[in-house]
Length: 137
Image (tube, rainbow, N blue to C red; front, side):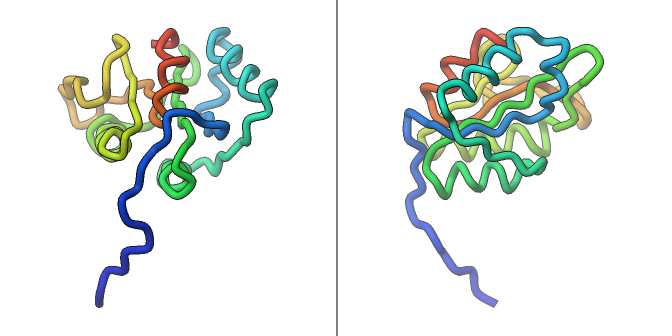
């Protein structure tokens, strides 16, 4: 069987009007995350959320813009793992011109993985949107 390239040279634009808010239950305890999500809604951003990392990130690549956030709280911890999910997505998004951010306001590529099961808050997508989210980390 052959691989078929459906889109060549995928590029993530700096600005976006599409958001995928993962772990949305965390807004109950994380006031800043709640403000960010409410701001996206107030600005008329398009909500794109399937509950799955791959389809939501795939949409960012196909549309060429967007932001996916996965923010945790005390009661609603993040489920996505750094090694298998977050780092891989961050690598691909950054190679396409987007940005990623995680603990300490650094790129996912700078996060030191210490365990197979490390889980973390992170966001990936269009650079301008990621810049607007860095205060959450």
